[in-house]
Image (tube, rainbow, N blue to C red):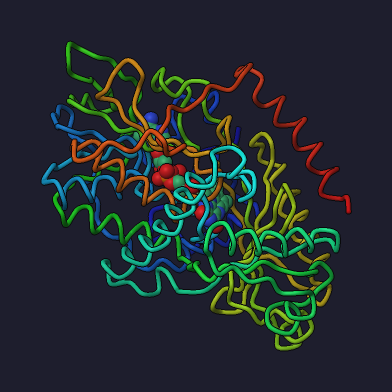
Length: 474
Ligand SMILES: Cc1cc2nc3c(=O)[nH]c(=O)nc-3n(C[C@H](O)[C@H](O)[C@H](O)COP(=O)(O)OP(=O)(O)OC[C@H]3O[C@@H](n4cnc5c(N)ncnc54)[C@H](O)[C@@H]3O)c2cc1C
């Protein structure tokens, strides 16, 4: 394992060195590690290089502390829950973050804030739950996008989230008809004005290349600067009176009577209620209510150097929309304001230092296959993080079966930029006793356990093989 190297915010200019793979971050797998670290720096990325000044947090949690509500995890879920508890309900919670606010997925994602809850298609949602419930779930996903707009406005950082649209692009000709049918279904059953563009329309209005055979357009999406957005939530939470502690991992969790005792490296925090907001970074041992319920998967992002004028014309990359394709192991990409391209896709199965360089090269080759005009483009940044899958491909907002003072929200399936802050808001209302989520809503049910949970990584390998084969068909 390579040596751990810590960078403080002012040292992030050496991020370029990291991205040339001279410095590697430590390997880490939530299924086996006991903590994601203690006070680790943000992973160097395009976002850390452009986030500006990091707002203050409340530093390391005190050695002995008591609180009504402790929130474990300082990403969008935890910070949003903390903000709403303090702002709306006058409950001043204590957020315990192992590293620093936004260190997990929330500071390093692709920044696609789009209407998405789970991985089911709109047709499958109707089959699974009936039309009324499917429509409620879809409405919730739109409410989550609206919530992002509200947060961006509230924190006064318009650059943290810019209005755009989302295009789901047919990567092979055989997928275009399914997208056209999906647009019809969304209009007819969900009352949503989704649009279908044929290949010519996609090329003229949005993007050229070899894999643009039609697209489904959603008008509701924002292109987010994920770390600025996390910083915005941090500031809102603290202003409202929440305490947000960095470098404060919960190493052990015991119950003494009605009180939870959370052990940190400095001492312990005693809490009446605990919220788990750790998503893809949830250590297996942390609490029995989440054991065997999450499958953390690595997602990897590259950011290229800015495109030249010739490359812009040649690729026909004129859209500011956020883009995904129709693969099961999908790619996601967007043009950044300075004409760089952010391109992401599945990462390694296990986090090994030398594997990431291969993954970066693989993603660059896939980008060039889509847009051959970019044959000479190079990568300036690449990084990765753990997204969270669940056994039923849905996020869950619920509580421990045997302890109503333990709440959680997690399992965003790589689509939590909009839904995680919204789930944090819902969770705050539940924790404050203001509402019970309707049990008819599929997300308001307990996290299911994976069958043969001990074999999750083996299952992942098999599913990746199958998906790779499927993605090459039609
Ligand atoms: C590369 C990548 C690209 C992505 N792109 C997109 C995208 O474009 N659109 C989209 O919608 N979603 C995307 N996602 C997913 C999205 O970022 C997440 O769903 C969302 O940020 C989850 O937020 P969270 O607060 O629940 O979890 P996180 O932000 O992951 O926060 C969890 C935190 O818990 C902390 N923690 C864990 N254990 C402990 C402990 N024992 N004690 C204290 N703290 C602990 C971790 O340090 C971490 O900071 C992407 C994810 C990745 C990795």
